[in-house]
Image (cartoon, rainbow, N blue to C red):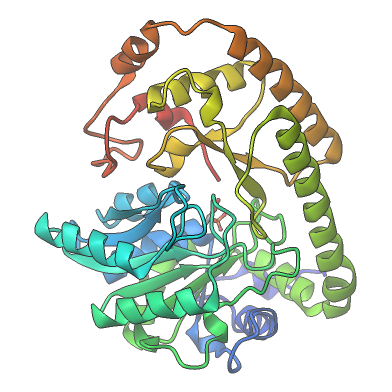
Amino acid sequence: MNYLEPHLFQYSDTQGTRSFREEIAKFLTDYARAAKALNPEHITVMNGCCAVFATLSTVLCDPGDGYLIPAPYYGGINSKTWLYGGIQPVHVPLSSEVTDEEGHPFQLTVEKLEAALQSAKKQGIRVRALILINPHNPLGDIYPAQLLKECLEFAHRYELHVIMDEIYMLSVYDDTTFTSVLSLDCLPDPERTHFMWGFSKDFGMSGIRVGVLYTRNHEIRKAVNQLAVFHSCPGPVQHVLSQFLRDRDWLDNVFFPTNKKRLKEAQNILVDGLADVGIPVLKSSGGLYVWADFRKFLKSQTFEAELELWQKLLDKKLLISPGKAFYCYEPGWFRLVFSNSVDIIYLCIQRLEQMLHSYAAEPVTNNTSSTADALCNPEKDSSGKPSNTQGKDVSQLKNILVY
Ligand SMILES: Cc1ncc(COP(=O)(O)O)c(C=O)c1O
């Protein structure tokens, strides 16, 4: 695996070496339960999914165009799509409220997509794409096959490109069925449906920087491959990962069962510990985190109070991401990552319990909002572009790194 032939140190195909793309095609065909074998020619390898987002959105859209994205979402997408392409998110706000029609908190529906699209049109924003993260970051939700199909049909009706980010595809536990877009045998608009996956999450290798784009659209691939020159993945890395993907015996019988078992164990410990502290979490079966409801610990139901709580958590050495960093429309939600050792999770719960206990005893000070007001910058967000969120943005959020 670690023996490197001299040719690996030379320039090679910027789309990714043929042998690596062949291994990825076989791997994704099997693990995404693809409807038919993936074509290695339809694959582009880059240095991470961030690079895939940046290049693909630049190719699909013109500056000023928008893409629909259900909020909350992995906030890193904003800067990836803005810095190269000047493209803006058009949020599809999701609410935690459960109604007769919507049995699940933060449920996405086609009606919500439709409403966001129409509202963007009224504001003069040309929407070119829909981005879906499945399994979702930060919610941990998995889209049921039916909803996924409805979203694809919606996008087809409006000739929108769909970017399916399935970077957590194999970090699914319980007996939940995950439906990859690759597994659907009849896509409403195959030429406008693009899939991405990477090594950062499912293999816990975020430092190796490898992301994969699969698109059947020849013109788009041609353009993306031009930009891939700036984002190529080193030959030795591609070689090592090819060997890695080929070891099916180890992946099937050791790595994936162990990884899933550990993730589930860690999730259980965290969810039970949070329940003891009085923090409910959204039920989820995918991802490396839980989406937790801290609303009752906020001094007021505002993003300023959320930021204050986040700062107090940080002071106690608890790095827990606030909902605002994910463009959540309701203050008080936080994402906690559990892909860590059991000892660390217990320590986290212990610190949380102590911190919340003393925080609850603190009197509510009226200077919360005035301090936060001083930090507010309603016009720009951390990527330096219009934030497209309701209410005030908090400039201090630029210091929050979310993955
Ligand atoms: C949903 C999602 N997509 C993409 C990325 C970026 O992945 P990469 O490390 O491959 O650039 C992340 C990282 O946190 C993520 O959560």
